[in-house]
Amino acid sequence: MGRLFGTDGVRGVAGTELTRDLAGGLGRAAVSVLGRHSSGRPVIVVGRDPRASGEWLEDALTEGIRRAGGDVRLLGVEPTPAIAYTTVDLGASAGVVISASHNPATDNGIKFFSREGTKLPDAIEDEIEAALEDPAANVGASDHGQMLPMAGARDRYVEHLVGASLAPLAGMRVVVDCANGSASEVAPDLLRRLGAEVTAIHASPDGTNINDGCGALHPEVVAAEVVRLGADAGVSHDGDADRALFADADGNVIDGDQVLAACAVGLHDAGELKGDTVVATVMSNIGFERAMTEHGIKLVRTRVGDRYVLEEMDRRGFVLGGEQSGHVIFRRYATTGDGLLTAVRFLSLAAATGATVGELAAVMRRYPQVMVNVRVVDRDGVASSPAVASAVAAAAEALGDGGRVLLRPSGTEPLVRVMVEAASEADARAHAEAIAAVVGAQA
Image 1 (cartoon, rainbow, N blue to C red):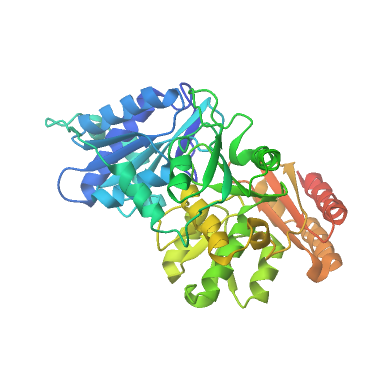
Image 2: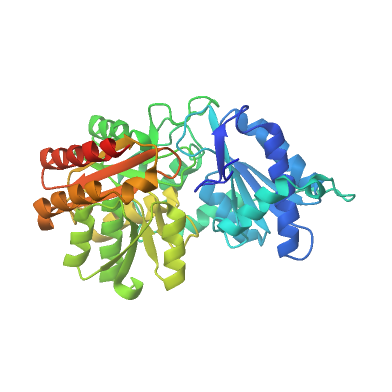
């Protein structure tokens, strides 16, 4: 069997790949492992998004935790970053969120946070996975855990977010697309508390409509609504609200690179960008890199995944990082990507500076980016192919400083992703397809 944990926890089709037995086993195994790494009875914060499968997975997970002797603080439906925040706020041993983020409603997932509110290190995940197969870890404890009372957690999380605002949003007209997910109640309320006039769309989860034609996977939806209503800005969350994309008054979509660029410049101008450095992934646009250079900001790139962005930030003490997809980490306020916090910081930056969100996003020029996925048998073999190396070198030479080439093996599928950025989409596509043809010939 391959590694159970992916880059964002355990995820799969609910009921077939992610079963009740697996959820219960993960709960028991987590308590077993946490017991080896801490003293006292483990206390685990548990929350979920509103998928229908979340209810029975929550029952199975919490039963497994309690049977193994762990206590549970049950939050119910809350954003993923709220689980991370509450874990730290309560001094709990760990946090668990039941969510498949931006995936369709048929999927679900189980993701763990450490007592520090960060995603578990690979080594601890490996211990949990090993404990799943250990008969001793699957024996119930003689002293079962309890369901501990939970009150006021959301209020404290919202107060924390309000405190991160740079200015009131008084008079700002905002449309927020909640993806029929876990932000459906809290996101509109938060923005209203900051003074915005809020129209919420896709904020009526029924267990089956999460991410369905809405949210951060479809930012054009909120962009169109902003134009229709004559609003000032739009915010688009994914199902578990750990990311946010935006739209300006003209209906232009603002991606994570643009948000990160604007926030980096804002912190740099305020003297609060530690090391004059921002952390992003290899997928961040070349336009982002150029904008940072123009403003005297250094860029550190990591592999794809917000966990790797955070690891690099913490390793070197940096305060801002993120991904093009809308995961942004403001390390002073959060231990993970937080779409609600991102909305607060980006919208309040506009309010504080008197700029529109479109003017903030214009700090960088977004170069056309074309991605071609090539199915291969040996992903690693492609990387060592002289023919592929020659094709990449030829494209890079032709693009010069006006573009970028990236080959990236998929971590979960037999694919090699060919990404090319160029001054025009036609050039980017031509080079991407030329390299993809060579990659395909090696398959």
